Length: 127
Image 1 (cartoon, rainbow, N blue to C red):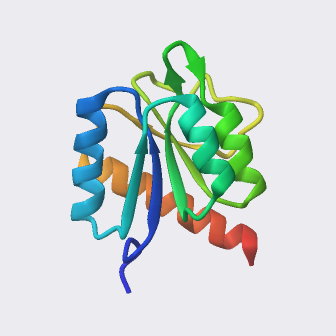
Image 2: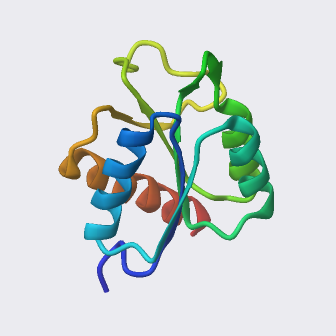
């Protein structure tokens, strides 16, 4: 079984073209479902409803950080990948010391690697 077979992904992205690009990459990787939301409110509602295997959250949505959505997902043990146009190695959030970050614009390899890393980390933590 491949790591992406049938998984469901919550994708929070406020840039329409970037969201479509990410969705195409994720679909090509073999995901089962990609739910795209473009607001923090929509992401919060989707996160509260659950049912995702992993989430890719744009870190900055119209000037507001997506950490609140990540906290909801974290309580449900759903791994999160933060996506950003910024270099985050030196500015990681203290609330998420082990967070996985992927830099935008996405490449297939970078997005795949970030998701695989987050899923593996989540599986190790659950074991």
